[in-house]
Length: 151
Image (cartoon, rainbow, N blue to C red):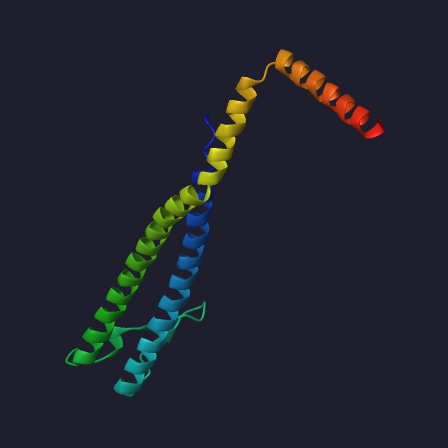
């Protein structure tokens, strides 16, 4: 299997981290928003229509309100749209951040790609014979400098 490029690895890690953060925020905001919608509806209805389940989460039960009250329908519909909208926003933010991370990491890694290609060109230009020749020239230059200092 071919390894992913550094740019793709950075992009995937960024999407994963932002995705986890967005989902956590969505769950917290959604549960908080729905709870306070239920609390507001309960206080407006004047009864105990907020139901706490075993986990302590509250929900608005439209069955406990008389069918002729419009507030029940409005609050129940708003809660559903609120949850759906939050999930759409979470997906959009995660996708946009992934696209942005891809392009930003590509731009940030451009100097590294340039440096890598220069190193590869230098490595292709040097053979063991050329290294020996450079070593001989360096030694002769060192001797020349030493003779100038002493003379």
